[in-house]
Length: 354
Image (cartoon, rainbow, N blue to C red; front, top):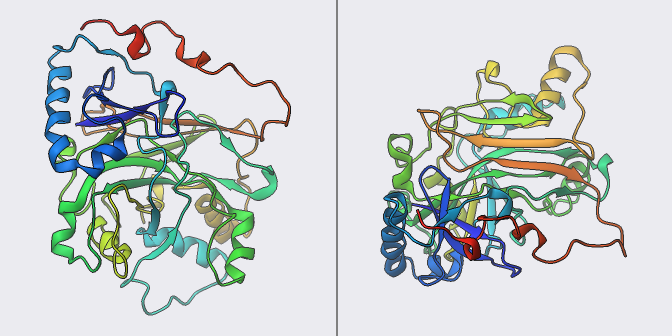
């Protein structure tokens, strides 16, 4: 099934079930008010959400309305925790080589990199990327992410897959010019990793068909900057650490509560004809080839789009489409609450029968 969260003026929004083609949605608040509530009692509530999903796809729901990603929050607007891995080694290799680092540590191919990211809030699929200073080196990173159920500490790899509840696409926003200073302190990222954005909908593994092999999600994920294709790698290729390995790593010394988000790291392929997974990769390639980076980082007004489609070119998660923006000035007039919800037939209040 496909799940989303409707903007309703609250921190956690209202849970929606979305049709397979992403065109219709139906409120699911009579089953669970929020996605976190559903995750907390998944075994009991998921079958009820699945029945609602089948009813919606069969056009039997009289509460269905047009699904508009502009009215969607992140599927999980705030999570108990967000752990982001680095599964595609070519991404880090390019960056290290561009900095003149030729040697790689012995654990490089044995243990994933992972950091604790900003889990509150997650940006919605149409929310602006708001950055205080556009000289901070604003970058996108196209990633996949999973949401887990409760995971016990020390989970074994062969049992990890049963704890994957949902898949999403993610834009892991990075401020590259702040990374070096933070890493020099030896305590990891904080300022360099502002809120990331999630796709309009989250999918259960069964929706992915053969693309999900139980360890990796195969298929092309694409990113555009200002309408220009940045990259189109296959998410199943060159993934050194699969999702099961990432779960095991995250849960090595702690249990993971239901609603934990784990990111794959920047999706990138060794076949460089498939492009870059972020602007930093493109800049690294330029440095390695021409000794100078020409590609700029994002500036205010730039646009980003990230999307993944299935083998028949149908949208899986919907697209993340964002603009980069400066912070709102203090005292500036704000739009009236609920103004964006007024479009006809775009909300549950304007629901029309199928």
